[in-house]
Length: 123
Image (tube, rainbow, N blue to C red; front, side, top):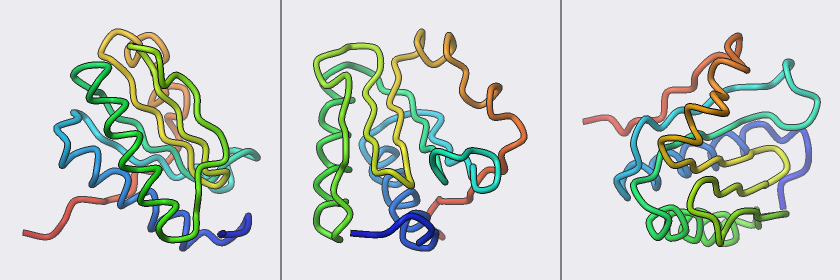
């Protein structure tokens, strides 16, 4: 398992989580780099799901990928929710929202000074 401060491993997991979410038709997928801004985590992946079933499926895929590379999920929340699913990998927190919850919590505004990480695959 990656240790706190192993930013390269957390960054790689964040990028793959964003790609998995995008490949599964989540919308508006972003990675926020919170290093030096948040004392709690290094990265957020934020995405909008199209249904509760899709958000749970994406969360399961991301958790399975993390486990496969030795970075298992530390905590999960909202797996039975239709609004917000959260995966906490310690150095990375993945937020999968429905449209309404994403607008309400507006993490991009709250963490507006955080730089965005490029994650799209090269064409």
